[in-house]
Length: 338
Image (cartoon, rainbow, N blue to C red; front, top):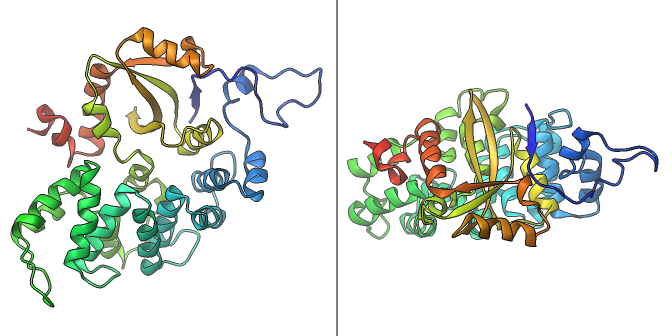
């Protein structure tokens, strides 16, 4: 497990990183200077910093720099979620779903997905639409299902687009009657990996794995929901910037929070030698020189980051999707979907 920081921060370190005036940071401290230590995150969180509360939830959920503790993860996610932090709301729902750090409660999971969905979280919108459509933890309501699936589909979510097409063409809407589920509708939802709300029903009578936070669905939840749509919509001859990569989600969340990059970067997951890695992409530029100039304007040395070609990234992303998300690979990579 490790982290690669590809950004120079101009000598900015956490408050307690240097013990006295004579001591000098080690090379490892320099590499990790983009992140605060857990104690600093906790101090910020207790002072009401919402991003710090979310990061602290991730740290405890991942066991990154602190012992893995789902109760503490739940506490900090809940603190941030109450302040309307969209990702904290989504992750809090996962803990209610899995029963990690809190008693399993599908109604609360739906409640927090609803909050996240209202705030624009695409996967929460999809999950909520499926819940309404199937009547999972909530009264079955075809019209509400269509509303939420449509919202997710507007952001080019692959599963939402697939399900919406079938719902709008084949589901019969009759007042006071449940929706007619045709074979095509079943196919749209059942051939893809089950959503988290569907998985709750499947696994309700089984004990979840000890490290449910590392499940495939939870990991996907940290990725930018519209990341692939963005990656494959940009001109293949353009360039983007990879800022950081790490084996831990919490490292990236901390980096994003500290540099105030919320909503400005895309988070992707890949797999190297059987191990999950997370990385951030920033911006779209017509030339390598333009990308380097943009980094300089942000006081980030161009030699400290990777300037990546969209065409090359797409090829690698298709290989990753084929292994981690085979149900949607054909949406972006027709050659892999055949």
